[in-house]
Length: 269
Image 1 (tube, one colour):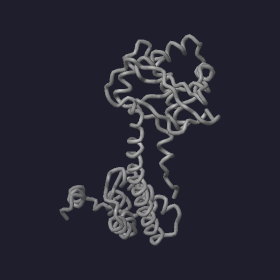
Image 2 (tube, one colour):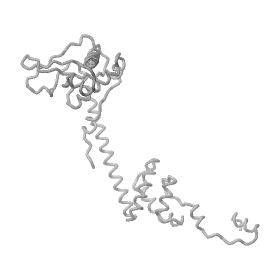
Image 3 (cartoon, rainbow, N blue to C red):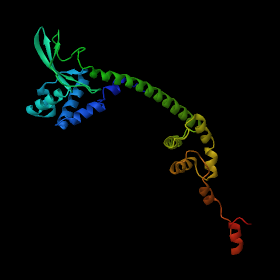
Image 4 (cartoon, one colour):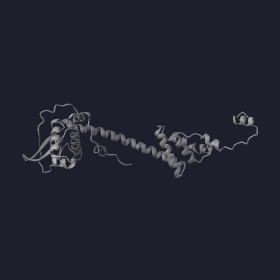
C-alpha cells in the first residue's frame, strides 16, 4: 500500500479563499492580476517561502508578457495589498529584490504600503529563511496545512480499512473457487453492490456466495452465466432467475383438446 504523505497533497494545492478571490476580481485589470498573482503563488510553493525571488525578466520569460504589462499589473497587486516589494540587504547593501505574496484572510486597509527591507547576512539570496512580515495573513496557509494533516490521517485510515475489507472478500472468493473468470465476475458483482450502497460485510458476501451454485443450477445456467446475468440486472443479492428455468423446462405434449390444453397452461389441471 502506497504511503500518503502531506506533501503529496499540500505541495499540489494552490489555496485561495473567498476574500482573496473577491479582491482580485474587484481590480480593474482583474484577468492580468489573477494570472500574475497565481504565478507568484505557484512560485512561492516551489521556493517554499512566501517571499520569493521572481524578477520581472523571469515573469516576462514565463508568462510571455511585455515589461509595461508586468509593471502595471505588479503595481496594481501591490497597491491592493496582494503583494509587497521586499528589498534585501546584506551588510547595508542592496543584494536583491523579492516579492512577498500576501494571503488575505480578513478585510484590512491597504493604504500606506511601503517597500519592506529584509536583512540577509549570507550570499544565498534565492532562499529566504523565516522572513518577517507585518502582514500576518500569510500565516493562514499554516492553518490549511494543519487541516490537510487531519484529512490525510482520515484518508490513511479509510484506505487501510478499504484494503483490509477487499482482502477479506478476495479470500472468500478464492475459498469458493479457483476459477479466475468466476473470481473476476464476483469482483464485478461486488462493484454493483458498492455502487448501490449495499452492505459490504464479510457475512453478507459469504451468504450470497454460499447459495450461488444452487441458484445457478435451479436457473439451468452455469455459475459464470448466472453471474453475468445478475450483473446485467444490477442485483445486489442473488435470487432465482425464473425465466431461464422455465424456458429450459421440457414442454408437455398437447392433449389434442384445446380446452384441456388451456386448463393445463393455467394450472387448473
